Length: 482
Image 1: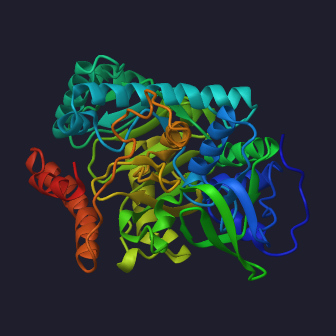
Image 2 (image 1 turned 120 degrees about the vertical axis):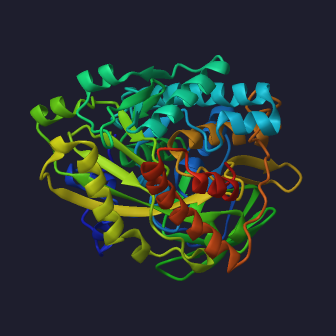
């Protein structure tokens, strides 16, 4: 059930609404006032302390309670639940994993690659099942994802993707030819090329704000203590040091198990710092479009979409008939800095708007009503992890590279099995207890990360000019771990 509305006593509602369309729409619809829960203002003792109030922490709490309902669990969040990537993302609950199946196979073998892919497929179904069971109305519709191939190079990449998927025997990705795409979608090609596409049915459209805020209410009703406006300063085995943001009180939580779930924001704490690089992704949302316009565009409710360019884009048709559309292109900032000012880059927003209109000319002059962004977490080898050390009782999950809306659920279930030291299919997955190398110190990190962003832009231009797979992309791929 929605939390009751309360009159805000400060500017918190406006501040949290400004994080993007997803939170703003919750307030607009009267579903959530985004008023922070009380902070922790005394020393305390719990069985488990989760650092960060996003989907990783919430799914972990949900999974731990499923195995032991008597656990006393605390979640410490500097702002409000879902403030980070969990409440700002593109709303894809997909079977994608940051590392491709081919990369996993090369490192861990065919069996591991198949197991990881199967686990992600199961995760999409699991998220849908939990939202229905817990009555979290988050616009979950599994309509699949379309990736358009708009020139000859992209079409070869699409065909290769389908061939790779087929060899693992657990994938349902299909190739749509130019005639089928032309008959169903109002998407443009590049130059004289008529676009093709791949279609993966294992992806759902989700309103991430409704999901993360709804899940927070579910675990809270089950006995989890969520302390918002409570900033973690440091942690060690058995304890977490924190500060109540508004009162300034500093104290300690004692807990046998400590799980760090901060994603890109973890880079601000010394114990994470170089494990995670915060990479900004930005989004726009249009005003609602008419049914006639959507009929011309062809994207149905529940479907998400992208294309095969190197500088990633992603989008969905929202439940209220808007485009929510995002992509990379924002710079990495020196020292892994994270700041609200980095969430709004006019040149990137303008690029996204032009790209959307180029993809789907039927968008026309539809107004952009929301612009937002935030940092996602990238490990040095672009490999996410769910890790736990039973000797110290400290766990860590993250590095989802933007694929976290579903992967957080898998992380929560995996962490629960690791905490209880269970030998399961989840704890045997290749990402369980994976340790990525550290990112390079500055200035190497700054140069390398920004060369990666620039390189993807250059790679797209190179392919359009030459009609051949980009040499720049191949070189940058070594830098990014692909």
